Length: 343
Image: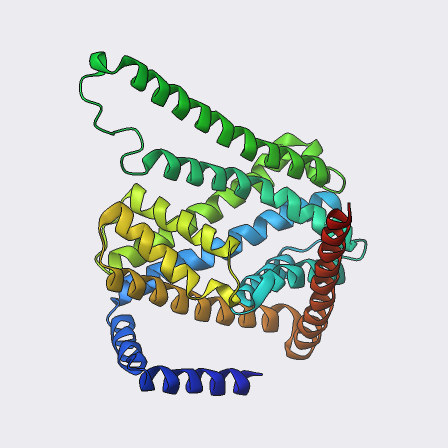
């Protein structure tokens, strides 16, 4: 499979060069940009990238430990999460998430796939709230949203009132939509998320580690923006975060490659007037560097926690089962769609 990917990439480069697109020149420039990233920025970014993975894995540990007392150990859970993160960087359909959940089932004696799904839903509560905050911020900070030139307000009272009421209505509507999603996640997660019945434990062992993981993610973005001399502000970080999230939602490529670069470039142009070439170089470099690091981190953890042979068998079997689960979900969605069309 790796060989097929390499041959395909080579053929694509040859075709593009024949069409006049200097891909090789761009790759050389990109490599020069990556080599030009100061060592301090590189190390700082990878430290926070590691923190993002470890703290998110720690939140899963808190959730699963509450659901299955006495059966859960920290490092196997963190390792399972790290494996999923690394796979999601280069596999389609977020199959890495399914690999993580199936690894949970394999390493926790009493855990079922439904229980692993419940843990996933519990963990997703924080990230749904965080995503809502980011999208709401982006909506409110779109240039010109509330700063259109209306002249003297006293001369256009009706227009001003309509715009104000309309803006409030849209904000309320957006909040209601996202809050509805949060409640749905909460209700579904309660089926197997025992930690939700103990709010204090949930806040300290699940919500707080997830928050720290998210802040580490923001720090990674800020460090790499600075490495490419792009303004590091709360606004620029939020725009990159939101555009990256949007790219993952609409992605049809492994790791949202290409789509992430396009949305990041548009976001940075919108908020900071950053040149497209600079934004694409930044986004590509960050994705390549963090992807390589995620794979290395997951490999080291798997070998350390499970051993080479045991880890290889566990990951391979979990990946095979995850593909089956993904296929089942696609079939179920297709069946529901066909039923709705028939109705």
